[in-house]
Length: 598
Ligand SMILES: Nc1ncnc2c1ncn2[C@@H]1O[C@H](COP(=O)(O)OP(=O)(O)O)[C@@H](O)[C@H]1O
Ligand SMILES: [Mg+2]
Image (tube, rainbow, N blue to C red; front, side, top):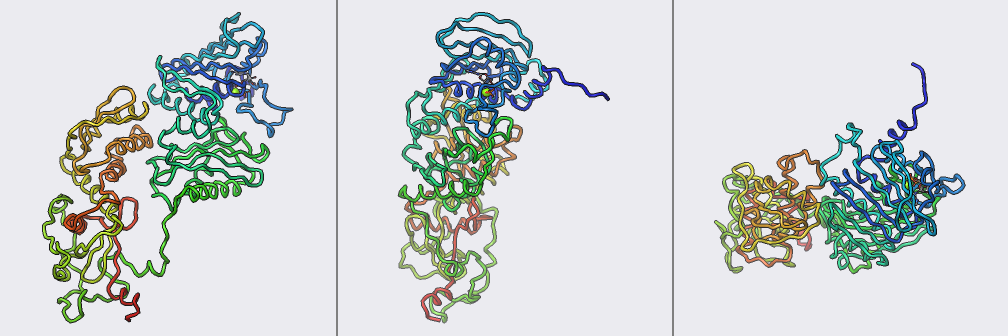
């Protein structure tokens, strides 16, 4: 086989395979060019998710007609200072984007520099179609029509216009967050979908693009070390989300998706968040250009640090410090020795002894033997928490101590910090985390419902309107029937809201808004080809979390006992949905040891 040079057009198409994966990646390149051109205002118009139409208009420096021809040639760039790629401070530097996009679409480039006339160049799938004068204000306007129309192999891999639109919006958001000094306007199919003014502060811009509530639920990050500056905002641990999509990271003004950085964020929140919950952060890392290599990824979304450990350490300590000064104190961990005295194994106490709660003399027969009746009774699983407990005794605290062995988790005596149920068991003191435990029970009820005829739903007295962004509503809308099987009755309500008519019955009174927002996140986190059934544990767990008794709710003794009894007959009730224990026990022998009685 003889070797030959590939024709330019083919080379461009090959490059397009790397640079232009989907409409959002073309859009990203065009907006980056507008930013590099010094634009103060950028307008984006999309149609059909960007597949049919992408237009980016800027008021930047513009190009003279000769430069426009060059710009559409491969490896032509105005941005590399003295051929030193290490010194690049612009978002672009490879000179590949425009020719690549033009090789797989119909691209119209119009531009005008101050004090000169405008010019237009139209390239259709790599070939020059026409050129001539154009009337436009100073700046540049690029239009990309019918992306991949002549490249069916690539077009096939595009998702629905809705999904492509969501990806486009994400691209704009990230770039708009990086540059609070630039105004951005986005239209999709003729409707205004995003608008941010110039001159916002960084926190204002971040809140405007993520969640307005973030402003009140975040702390400022600000740390400088060895010429590296870290700034941004970080949510309080309690303001968390079900997916990590709401973490925005920027290196020298460039949005990146870097595993080192996301790992560092996770590390910083490690003890503050459950493993499946994620903080909302926007972090801006600025470091000397020679300390980072931006030329490692075709779409420039990854970077390589010269000193990764320094960067990682800065993010962890920057975030931790910010969270500390933000008036938030993390939980004090008890010492390991103290912890070891507590057990959550129903059948053992560390001391290996079980004594009656009263005096050893009146300990009932067989009190040290594991209770054989403490096995999951499947037929009992549907007893509801707030129904009167079937066998509760000891309603008044002065009631005689219950006979040992009746209730492995004991009889409720009271509540501590409105969060923990304290119960007296025959062989020790039991403490139950009411939220963690109830969350687990709700999940198991949902699972049981699904295994049967589907989860029953409970209509809301007044349907609730939940406002979300458009892609989130789209995701929910595409899953309506599956969500209905889970007992959640939703309806689209305009472009940016959902109407909730009924919630899964096992959830009881729940935080409907939080539930629906989290589900929308949850849905974006997985492949569209998977059915909800295949992801049921996650979705049901998300629901269970919202349907559970909160920490901080005062419970009656009756309610507490009902919870304990349901736990005793529910499988897996010893651990919550995040893998933490739902209850612990201090055996009587150990308690005596703690007090030096033995
Ligand atoms: N919106 C714009 N305004 C001014 N000049 C532009 C614009 N878009 C592209 N250019 C010019 O075209 C050149 C090629 O653009 P591109 O193919 O994206 O490569 P790169 O951005 O890597 O240089 C740029 O270097 C720049 O000089
Ligand atoms: Mg570029």
